[in-house]
Length: 250
Image (cartoon, rainbow, N blue to C red; front, top):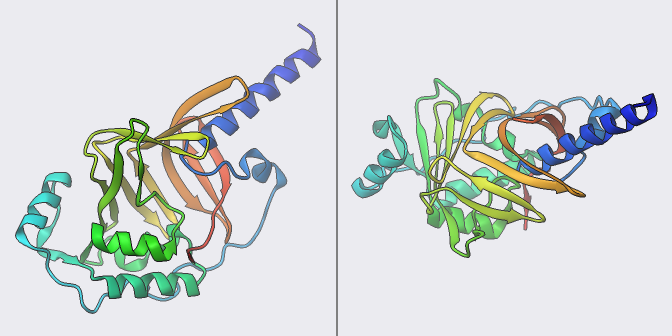
């Protein structure tokens, strides 16, 4: 085998791995390997310079809600769990829009990190209203699974360094994100573990994508904001650089 053929095969395999692993994140296929190769050095602006989580009207969820959340999230601290009304959630999103924050900023806000004490519960009713008003760019609030069943976020529970996205399809399911397939595993739960500002480890999300005749699947393991418009996505097939968009009003 001559050198040119070896190089061509290496490039093809590298491109296949890069594109598939990025598509598998269940996100839009964005800058992929080109951003990493460009040596982009855009300065990361300070994130969360002001508290964007400060809910004045939060209240305790009812007993049935607490019991249901405890079943989905073992070890949940229900004593410090508060339900966030739409007015406060709406103000949180408005602040994010005004600050040009991304969903990685939103879900790693200082009040959600370890040591903050409180844990916040966003109900499916609140999330449905937010979905109509804002484009968050994170996991879908609602959609249709590949098997035809509708799905919806039943709750988001966030605080003390973790964020849980709880879907009403309690089993594992897949949905199409454009041409790519995203998979929610872990019994319908996607969990973020906050590592710092704009930085989360992820459990329960994977996806599949194709480039020409090459297809593959990968687990999404970590997302880290590296500039005002870029993030590094760590997958079981290796890291990729992708576009990161700010929260906006629909």
